[in-house]
Image (cartoon, rainbow, N blue to C red; front, top):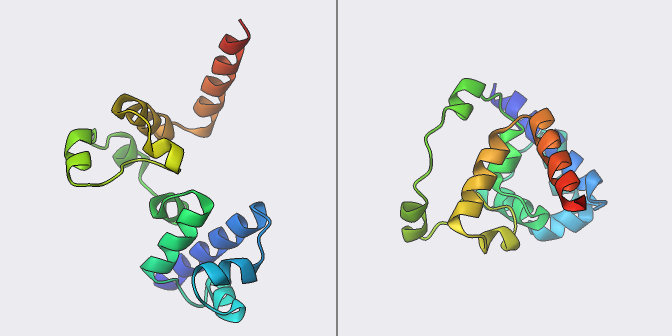
Length: 139
């Protein structure tokens, strides 16, 4: 199971790199590795350390959770019925919750809450909401 996870993680890192038109050398610099060492991540032969994964996620404007969520099969019942986060407690502890970019970090608590619920939706529901918002903007 562990080897399978490392392989899936490598595939996800490769997809992200290709989508953003980066080279392995570009990302090797971010994680302070050689290009050949970084390529081991994408081949699924070595998993990145948590600090390396954090650096990669931040470079893409994502969270580590965003990347890992693609690599594991979540039980949708657990995900959709997850507890509502206590934003005040999270902020008091010094965490920035449910943010993807620096711009998201500046959002108000209610806006982050809305993003949290939006991210729980399936792709079709998200597309429908986006289409509706675009339609409303034209009025």
